[in-house]
Image (cartoon, rainbow, N blue to C red):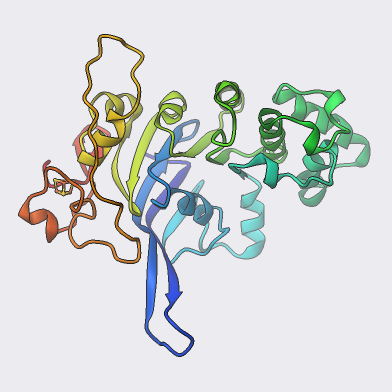
Amino acid sequence: MSYLVEVNHLKKYFPLKKGVFSRHKDFVCAVDNVSFGISKGETLGLVGESGCGKTTIGRTIMKLIEPTSGNAFFDSNNLFLLNPKKLREIRKKIALVFQDPYSSLNPRMQVRDIIAEPLTTHTDIKNSQLRDKVLELLSYVGMGKEHMMRYPHQFSGGQLQRISVARALALNPSFMVLDEPTSALDVSVQAQVLNLLADLQETFNLTYLFISHNLSVVEHISHRVAIMYLGRIVEMGPTKNIFANPLHPYAKALLSAVPNPDPDHQQEEVILTGDVPSPVNIPEGCRFHTRCNYKMPICQRIEPDLKEKEPGHEVACHLY
Ligand code: SF4
């Protein structure tokens, strides 16, 4: 299958210096050998507890941080090997929406200038065309000319996230990394922003990497889901399969805590014991074995690889 976005064996280790004179370095293993692909027009939801590495993946793909090793392809271009000029060109096709619209938008700029900034920086748009283009972008997110001259503090969180999305659309991207785009918003507003993102995806055939710790939100918007634990993907597959029949013990525990609207649905919540191990000191073998109720002797020695269990549904666990 050919993907618009493909990540292969991505690793990101952050060095930790022990002391001024110490030569020995420890590493925070944020992302460890992660691979996935996203087809054009598809949404891949990347979920896991905070600190599991999902945000680092998004930022490494965007080249906001340097990878330790691995590759990330966009439209068959290896983002990690492009020269700066070509990378700037390709980056116009990739947009990032941050979690917190309150801090990601410049409080001293009017909305008109916030949205116009990528256009004036990266295109030859004429001043006479700028106003119409900004209005067009605002209309995509359900806003209008009455909002153009206002400052960020004059908007609600939901409106600010709409402005962030309008700005992200300015250069006509085909791939968007959405990093917890609804988690700073009230629950009532989250659904509106999710529906807006789904509508925009359909209109512009956008491809999304949707990063979130909220499983209900991910279920709502994603075609496929990848579940991360301590820097690795432990299960990945179509959203319906993962939510109806999670395979990995960690995925089972996470999903057992998601409320089910069906009153006849009987589901026992699986309580995980123990803390997530430190990413500086990853356990040998399966990195989930310190918390797993199903662990076997092999689990403490050999790290399981992600293997296909059903068509398109992969899991990294020795039980399968
Ligand atoms: Fe549990 Fe072993 Fe599977 Fe890891 S490999 S999730 S420890 S059963």
